[in-house]
Image (cartoon, rainbow, N blue to C red; front, side):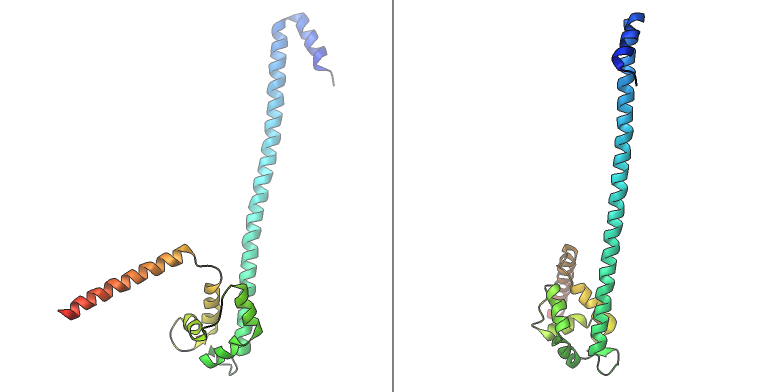
Length: 173
C-alpha cells in the first residue's frame, strides 16, 4: 500500500483542510475496524462461556444420575428378600457395606446413629425404606445444608411451638 505521508503531502498541495479530513477519515476507519474486531472477540467469548455453563449443567446431571444408579444398585444388593423395601435389620446390614461407607464419606456424612439415619430416610414413617425413599433421602443428605433448608426448619419449629402454646392455653382453660 501507499504510505500515509505520500497521500497527506499530495492533499496538502491542494488544501490543508483535505489533510485534516484525511486524518479524521483514517482515525474513524481505524477505530471502526478495531470496534468490529473487539465485538467479534467478545461475542465469541460470551458464546464460549454459555457453552461452558451448559457443559457444567450436563456434568452435574450425569453425576446425579450416576449417584442414583449406584444407590439403586446398592439398595437392590442389600434387599435380600427382593421385596423392594428395606427393613431396619437389612439397613443395619447395609451399614456394614464398604460401598455405603465410602459413599457417606464422600458426602461428609457419618453413620454413627443407624436408627436416626433410618428415620431420616423413612420419609413416610412406614418402618421400611423403599428404593425411591432411599435414593431421594441419600441425595437430600448430600452436601451442606442450604440456608433455605435452615430457614424452613426454623419456620416449621416456630409454627409447632406456636401451635403447642395455643394447645397448652386451651387445655389450661
